[in-house]
Amino acid sequence: MKKHLHLWLSGIAALICFGVFAAAIIYPAFEARITERALWIFAAGIGCLLFTFVSKLKIGTLLEIERLESKVKQLVRGEVLRSSRGECFYVDGEGKRFLVPDRETTDFLATSRGPILMTDVEIEEYPLRGEIDSVKKCQIVEAKGLGHVFVLLSGKKYYLGSWSPVFDWGRADEKHALLELAAIRAIPTGK
Image (cartoon, rainbow, N blue to C red; front, side, top):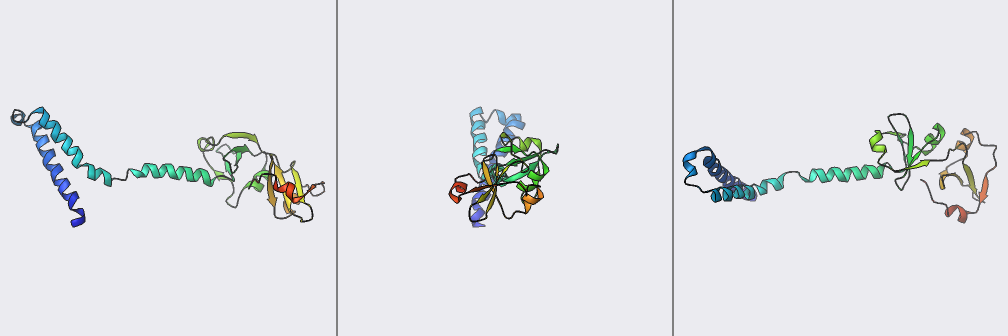
């Protein structure tokens, strides 16, 4: 009870102020006894006394929603988004959006969650930077002496855990570049 005493006293004082204020407005007999200045003082008193109740309201919820929106924007980085029209877009780590040209590239860039369905309005919040390269036509790079395989899409490298995707794309017979590890490290990482 003691820790809520200020709320109880504030509530009682607010009711008294509100009662006098309402009586002055409703009953014309009180109008002659209470000046307009007193009414303004009572109105200010009601506002001040109800201020403790306002602080208990969850006004911070609006701020929390804004924080959640920014977290969602962070979560979709490195993901493939699917619009309601069926178009797929890749959002890179910098928050830039690229149109994905084909299903194979979509499957390669998508995480285990798969393409995330979002509204066109949500997708358009990410600036469009053009079309990302297709895995059917991109450059495949192998680290000299190590066997690590990378795909270069729109100037960024993407690690392949094995040669299996290259076979799936029908590109196993193509020649690929052999680069020193230092040269590969100099290329920005896509995901």
